[in-house]
Image (cartoon, rainbow, N blue to C red; front, side, top):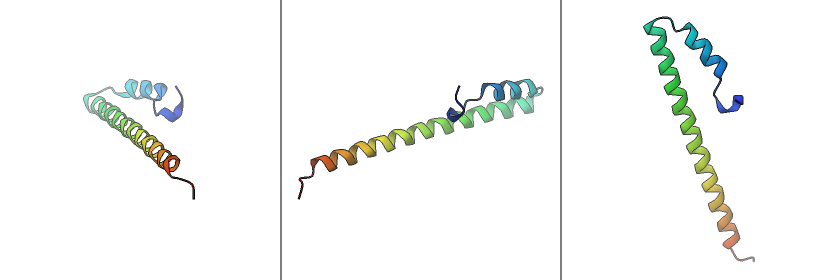
Length: 66
């Protein structure tokens, strides 16, 4: 996986191997949930930016030239 996606398999494997008690396992679960939420938010923002760009381009193309 590419590092810009925020999904680092080796890192998660290491954290899982280190999760030897309930406290560490819960911390790992919390981290995974937070990172998934962050990824979804970033994807939503990218979609919104794309929509705003498309709207702006459409408005520019609709304007009559002076």
